[in-house]
Length: 202
Length: 260
Length: 170
Image (cartoon, rainbow over all chains, first blue to last red):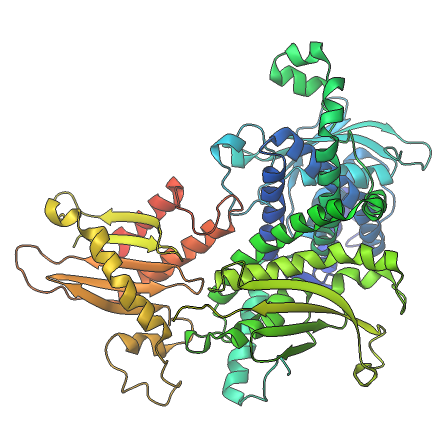
């Protein structure tokens, strides 16, 4: 992708725009698609089965969803890199932009906002205004406090970022399903991994 | 029998095209993500079984000091959601070495996920102005065709390749190119291990089939059964595009309700 | 006009019920109010009969199938609406069937003073049913809602009532 729109305009703005257009193109032309409602329904069946299996111990459900997401993330990143052929990000700011404008767009056809940067620029938030995982979901009373319904997302991000040598913590801060104003996922970079050996392999 | 049915008139084709356009206009997500979600459900189900069976062993390791803390603080302190994470391939290996009873529990869990999906899927798909469905011909064969065509297309992006029936409640739904295991690169002569590993991957669709049937009135467990097996594809059916010499056969039995 | 609306599950179990009344103008007389569920259940048999009744071949005999069957044969996606299926003294009962065998039924009461039989305006009533059906599907999409269990969501309830205001109790 070449960001050569017009030489005089601010290069940062031009590249931001091009990433968006580029992702739109990948979504339109390089992506096989399926019905979003089917996706929602399938994820819902998985979560509700987990709630039954763990006898509504929602902490365990959260962790299981996270773990499932991690196992998906470590492989999904390959598909993502193969499909987009994006260069390595040189900053966390750039990474956040690729996550919101490209990864979420290409996989879920949504473009969440990024914000809430920490002063030392090592953590940021992803604000999911639309969340195809949780469309139509109403949490039952007993789940409203502890269950992070879309926790798989955190796992996916954790796994994917780890594969590009970024050791991050990823967690839900708030979720509209719980009555919060916003759905906010927090990403905090701990360190850049030197070797290619992924953690968590026992 | 071809689930497409006999060649249709142009009017019907027009409606089909409209329906197709309508389907395409619905919100979408990436197919790869969906495939991964579906396929990852198998290691997930194994993991759940693994963690549940370890429940008793892991209890004594809880730290009493942490336990006594306020729940919020507690969860923050010991919050490591990746604790206990086992990679998918290891989980599958674990499944292979587990006993039959354990494997059956994993399969049941998957079939339940499929069932609750199927139960709701039919209402969703039919509601969407589906021209292939009408009350007037809502007999069992139509429901099976609905499964072969609409449900399969939604789930796997393709139809069932061949539907066989004895017209007395037994159906064989043959899929020559079963998408979830497409990438497994399975050889012609599958080993016993490979077959065992394949089995849980057939459970969700089995559940879906039963769920769809249940939601359309074929409800009682004693009356409906579905299991899947690997069958050899007759030579005559093998075409150049299809590499597999085997197919997945979903065997559905519906005992007609004894009343009426 | 006051209406009593219910969704009945596959095992003839109640899933949801609501009464739409305008407190200033008209309400069900108390003695009738208690009867409503029974009247509805009595109509379920008729509803089930209609469900399995031979459907006129598309196009061929549309004109001859009068009454409640007319609306069923008009368009392929509207054959869920059955129109008026029964009556009980001055009350009219309409029905709608989802493909998953959920029965949507409603008792329409006319002006209780006039004693005249109720006239059903198929247009708005059908729209009401179709939109409730859509709400029902959305409820179904909620993974924590189990098929055939009562719908307790206050969101669903308030949305159904909004629809009733728009289409029925003007």
